[in-house]
Length: 147
Image (cartoon, rainbow, N blue to C red; front, side, top):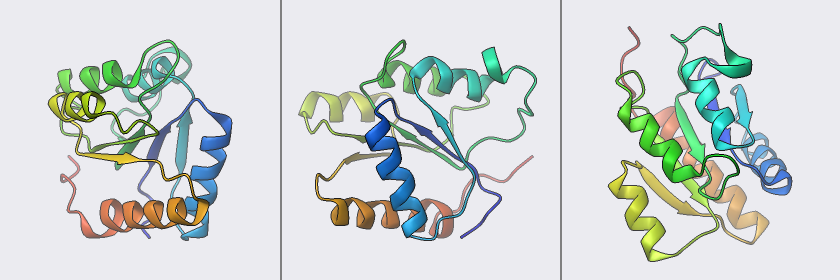
């Protein structure tokens, strides 16, 4: 898979983070993965603030894997801020969460999520889901041209 394409993983649960990283590696997805452990850190990365002040803002992730239940700033607000900013409004965002509540699904799509995936409980199903995600977003999907 394309190595130069960065993935932003926004996940506060260390077990889910490890599981996602293992699933990506097991599927030979060797892209750089930036992990933000709360919503504020995700926004800092995307907008070059806080500990990410001064980073090259021309490098946007190929896509964002976003959990909804996050400390500091929840995933819905992160998604809302991504869509509100001109530079990031078209950035693909995949909600990857344990919630299968209809209101969360509807709200995520209303806020501009490109996809909504419930985390499978079974590890093998989770690995397969991440494989499909990687295949689609990194190989099959035609992203926006880089300016």
